[in-house]
Image (cartoon, rainbow, N blue to C red; front, side, top):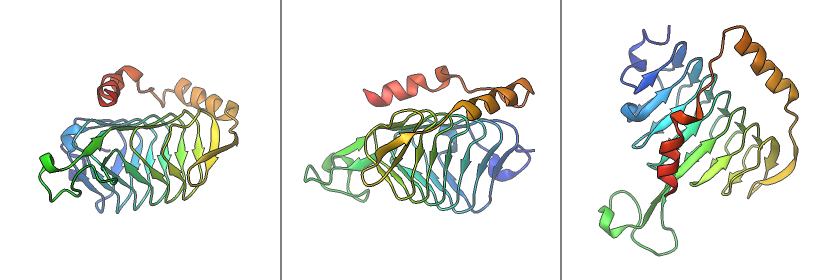
Length: 203
């Protein structure tokens, strides 16, 4: 089903049952690998110039953007609510060079890094994820949060900057994942698929 629509053409790899709405703008498809059962809503903006991995059962809601030129990983069952900004690269705002992409690269001081969103992690509306961040497996991030440092697994975070509020229960979530897999409806994305790209972006 996901392969029949022209908006789904040109990706590095593409699974089954992928719905990319026609209002989504996706550039750099040759860098993008997508699993199965994925929805990318209208008005999403993705600009990839480095590897971008989207696992299975991932939803990217309307008005989200992914930009910055670094490696991005969405593991299985992760998701972004409306308006989330994933920023994997940035100019130096503190005076280390000229800023913005109209300036030749040799006059800028641009940092490109990675963003890694773990399995079952969810990010609330209008949150901002900055470069060099890992959101741990199963972690939930509140709306409007700014994530500037990596977050622990199976936790709830909120605020500016995001701070840990409490643990997030995981037993029902993982049991449901196992049931989905046992019914033949889920094949996990192996960490080996994206490990090298993430390691390269950290160096």
